[in-house]
Structure formats: structure tokens, C-alpha cells
Amino acid sequence: MYEAFYNLSTKPFQLSPDPRFFFNSSVHKRAMSYLRYGLSQGEGFIVITGGVGTGKTTLVRNLFSELDQNEVIAAQLVTTKLGPDELLKMISSAFGLPYEGLSKASLLRQFETFLKKSEFQGKRVLLVVDEAQNLPSETVEELRMLSNFQTDKRSLIQSFLLGQEEFRHTIQSPGMEQMRQRIIASCHLAPLDKKETRLYIEHRLKEVGWSSRPVITDIAFELIHNFTKGVPRRINVFCDRLLLYGYLEELFVFKPEVVNIVSKELASEVAVPDEDEAESKLKAEKKAAAKTPTKLVDTEPGSNSPDSATEGQREEKMMDMKKQIQHVEVALESMEKTMLAKIHLLRQTINQLKK
View 1 (cartoon, one colour):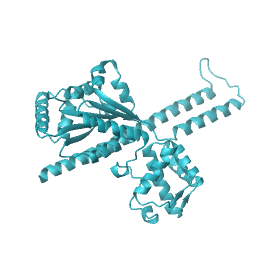
View 2: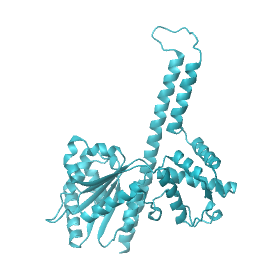
View 3: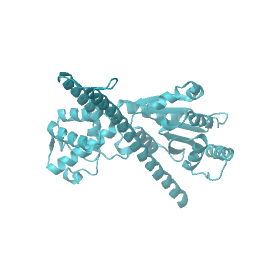
View 4: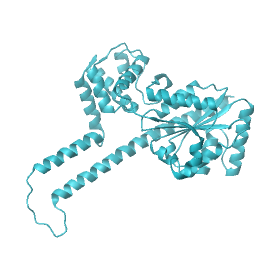
């Protein structure tokens, strides 16, 4: 729709990860350097953490686009709360190995044979585990045990672990000392600042042929950052809607009022308000209630007054809403990554059948 109107070759803010749109922010550049360093070392674990939508999966896609398939055999695993045995089956499937009806011992022997064969062929094996925060501690320990498959020179498998911030707490727990000793580098992906948010938007637009039309004013860029909080996925959603609105209204300049209209539209479509907005609203209601004269009412001994009960209910509802927002975001990211992983696995299977 809006692509033709603005003379763009394709949609610049699609949600699915695409290496072409990879933006080297300061923190993403650092994370990519760690991943490349890990590959050069050929051993140990690299840990990348970050909030929902901060670009962890995009990092992996960008890394995979750089890999030489003649040198590295790579597989990505999107996890749920897998036990150690289930993990081995998922890993076997990701690398195209059979797993149905095999015991844990058989799976381990088969995987060791696969690793040694790959080493003999001069290839390294890389396992990328996404959504690692979902893994129980015993499953993380199973991953560490797999790194014990090694030759006299180096480990036969290397693992990159990607997860949300809570995964950092997992690996910092008392029972993870041996795991921590195997981690050679770690990095946390923070949201983009105002300057990088603007550069991110301009980068994606330029990749599809943007030539400063539509024009986005300086204040409009700042408002976009304020609304999205610098989270790449939120920026993509917002800017996609902004371009659609511009197309429908035939706009070639995006001023602050246009950004405000789009932000209100997006906010109204969500079942619950933004956390900051909700907190501000609650504070305003409390302030107004404090100024309102209190009416005397008859209550039973030990019962709460209507005003305090209403205020307590509001706070309880706000807490529930915040939790719902977080759960929805996590669920959407997990569903998206699971689908991408299945597509990747299907492509691998098709390629094997062609051979």
C-alpha cells in the first residue's frame, strides 16, 4: 500500500528478522563482536540477554548470514520449559538427526558421533539457544555437559545462549558455578537512545530507497522515541503504522501532531494502557480523591470504607494489567520465534531431500 505511494521498494519496518535491516547500534555492535569472537575461539558459551523486542533474534539472523556453510554447521533452538531429555531430542532434531524412540544414552552417543564426524570434515558445530530464560537449571546444566565433548585441542560444540534478563539470574544462581566458568563473554541489549532511535529509523528507510520523503521532523523523531522507549520491535510497529497513516492522509511531512495521532490510535487498540500512562493516570486519580471531601458512611466494625476499597481495587487492577502486558509480549515473541525456527528446520529438511 504505502510502499508505492512513498516510492519504497518494500516495507521497511517488517517484524520478521532480516539481516539486510540489521542496525549496528553501539550495544548491538558490541554484541556482534562478542558473537564473532566466540566463533573465532571455537569453544565456551556466549550469553546475550535483553528485553522483549530488543533485537536478540535479529543478531542471530545477521550472524547466520555471515557464516560459511562449508566451515560451520549451525542450528537454532527456540526453547520452552524443556527437561534435559527433551532438550537432547530438540537438539538432535535441529541438526537433522533421528531421535524418535532413542534413549538418552543413545542420543548422546549419536550426537558425539555427529560432532566427531563434523570435526573430521573440518567443520565446527554451533548451537544457538533462543529464549534460554525458559530453561530449568538442570537443563542449562545439560547444555554445559554437552560442551564436554571435545578433542585434545578444543570442544566439539559451541553454544550461544540468548534470553531475557531473568536468564542472568539463572546463571548467577549458586549451582551454576561450573556453567559460569565456561562463559567466555556476555552482553546485555539495552533499548536505543534518542539519537540511535532516529538513526535506526533512517537506516531502515534508506535500505528500501527512501530519499527524505516523507520528511520526519526533529520533534517527531523525539516523540517516536518517547512512545516506543527505544525498543526496536516497538519502533517497527509504530513506524509501519505511521507510514500507513501518512499514505491514507496523503502526507509527505510527519509533524509532531501526526505522531501523536498515531500514538493515540495504537494506544486505543491495546486492551490495557501503557505502563507509564497507567501509573500517571492512577496518581492523578489518587490526587483528585485526596482533594474530595470525605462523606461519613455507616460501616460494620472491621470493614473497609468504600473509598479505600475502590482505591485498593484500582491498584490491584493496575498490577494485573502490567502483568498481562508482560505475559502478552513474552508469548508473542515466543510464538514468532517458534514459527521462524520451524521454517528454518523445514528448509534444512528440504535441502537434505534435494541432496
